[in-house]
Length: 117
Image 1 (tube, helix red, strand yellow):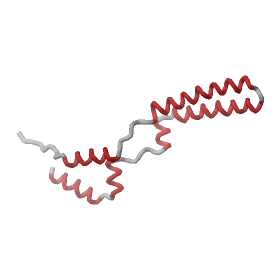
Image 2 (image 1 turned 30 degrees about the horizontal axis):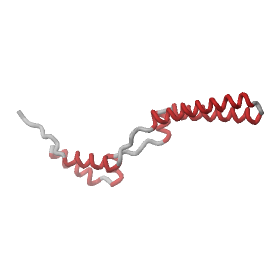
Image 3 (image 1 turned 120 degrees about the horizontal axis):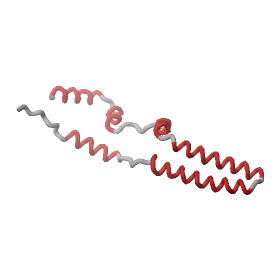
Image 4 (image 1 turned 180 degrees about the horizontal axis):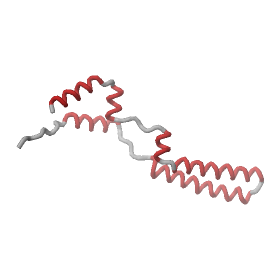
């Protein structure tokens, strides 16, 4: 146990500051990683863009009835996209101070030593 603790301390001394912070608070996922985790958001945004584009086409063409209908669909598509964002993309974020405090508590708490019976 003491040897493991000493090895861990040696490893901590050899770590750069960036490696240490990456260990206690890993980097946030990239945009592509988020898209792979939750593909419904880009689908909703693409749907909204498609409806807006089609509505603009009919507006330029002069068909007010279709253009008006598509602008109503745009509102629905935007509402769906905003709902997706609200319910799936914004998890609560941890404050850096909370992470540091938790890490400090873990480091200052003695590990339980195995007892022999």
